[in-house]
Amino acid sequence: MTTMIGTYGTPALTYAAQFKDINANTAWFHGFDEFAFEECTRHGINPCVEFATFRADYKKFPHLIPIDVDGNPIRYKTHLQGVCLSKTDFLDEIENNLKTGLSTYTPAGIWLDYMTYGGWFEDPSPDLQDSCFCADCIRHFNQATNIDETNPQRILNLHQEAWEQHKCNQITSVTAKYTAIIHDMCPDAVIGMYMCPYTPNEYDGALRRIFAQDYNLIAPYIDVFTPLIYCTKSGRDASWGRAFLEASSKFIPDGKPVQLILDAIDFPSCLEQTILSSVQSKGVQMFSGAEIFKDKKFMEIFARCASILQA
Image (cartoon, rainbow, N blue to C red; front, side):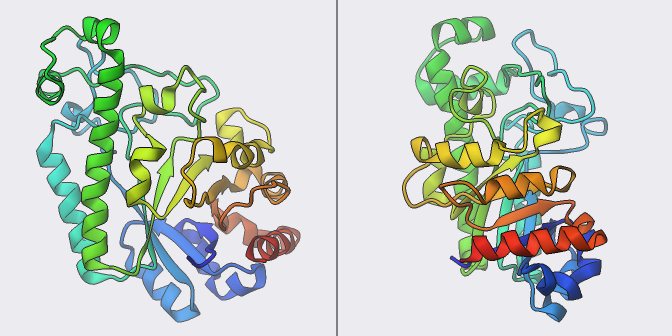
């Protein structure tokens, strides 16, 4: 797999002619953006799509919000990811969006985003709530596990392991479906997945327990894992990416590379710390990467770090 290094966000492509100056070869951007594809083609940049899955306008579609253990929509402030996976019309719409995009464009890569159950982890004190306990989701759980229990609290008290495994199976099943479409319609595309950046033991196992992301289950369908290492937003220091990489062999299957996405508001220290890791990131993405081009010194730092990652 080519070592992909570059920026996330369409605004960075206004600087497409300068990508070579920072040793960047790839641009990640939201959706199948015509302008982004045109600029990438014009400047020889790998175009990679961030494809949003389980996130919606919850004010417009409140029925998609996952249900908590008390039968209420889960709490959220300004951000939330995850939808009730019993709402098959929504899932069909996402699948159709993927097929429509791939029938028009040929990206070098597609990164699946928001492939989790309900919650938000870009927060120093995340509000982690168990979900999704609507009647349809509980019915599906009972059918899948041969368990006969409709009370959410009893499910958590008596069948926590089965409930957690069922949710992980759900995420994996949809991941497999989307990646099969990508393989069929765009067989040369790299398939990535944006991941909750928690290690398996953090927050009482929230990676699986809340967000239902299991590296071992997902690995057969994904080429590269991309944890969202947004240090300031998550209340972490600049060494977080380095620490994640150095711990990754304990929980990420052999042969599956990790490619960090870092945040420009944490630059340059986050990237400078990352390249010191004894386990290298397989390339890197810089969220809000347009900011790098606004400072000549930042461009020089990024170019130096990128050359190390490409070595």
